[in-house]
Image (cartoon, rainbow, N blue to C red; front, side, top):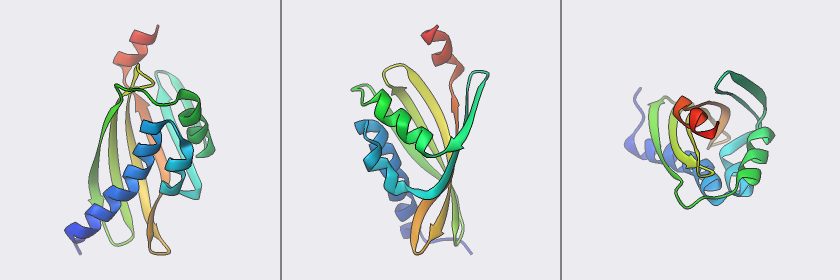
Length: 129
């Protein structure tokens, strides 16, 4: 059964908590978007990384905010208790572009990200060299 448009807005709002944390460079803001057991997997060039979501939180705090940071959230799929969200980020820390996919689940009535997968754009990797 297709979810209501209102539910899409609720999922988007949950994902925006993550995005606002990145924009502000403050993991405390982003934490509410994730389950405690969440994991993060990703690639920056040929460098693969995986681990607990704390790794992402540490990066958010280390990188901080940047005035040129821009992003958007797209709710790609939504079922009763699961959603897939795409996050596009430009100029994270002033020099990195990412595409993230968030697998979200409705846990105890709240949408939480349980898995974050990311890829750093190869264009921004070559610019950092």
